[in-house]
Length: 241
Picture 1 (tube, rainbow, N blue to C red):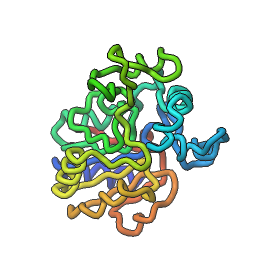
Picture 2: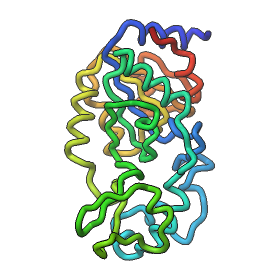
Picture 3: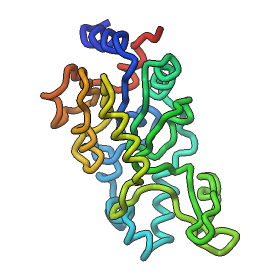
């Protein structure tokens, strides 16, 4: 056990008010690509840049092309929770972790057993008819061809926040309340360069800020503990109870 792991273990042992804030790097160990790394989606070649495809305007104007990309790159039906997701669910069950705030849309925190999860950017597992609001699971989107359509004739839209769209107000309020009242904030798998999500850290007033990320972040100098490691490899070493 390294000194950094011992320090993180003590922080966890001494608190029952921990909040976890996670980005794409939390799910890369489950085989889900991130966006901005060398191998991320933003560095792959498509007819349009991913930022353009994942925008509200593109969804409205090129709906079929949006869903071609969305099925291929955004829904990962075979992905399973990794060691990070499982440890966070264990910490919540033990009364240590109060909430997970995530930028990810893969639903793996919920699948791992976490109960209080604020999905800032929505989830691929929730899809709604724009006309009648009927719910459809991700499997329906995957099985459909072209533009998925409801039985009523309306177009089905994933409940994910696209570029040019606002975050959900209720989700924002819940995430801000959790972070602002936390004693410990563990931030992992995020470059902390994308707003408004990165701005959530400004609400933290607690004792310990822990950053776990493969690369350096703009907030490293503010943290109690910084670990440039894989999230799952770090959290898997933490003992609960």
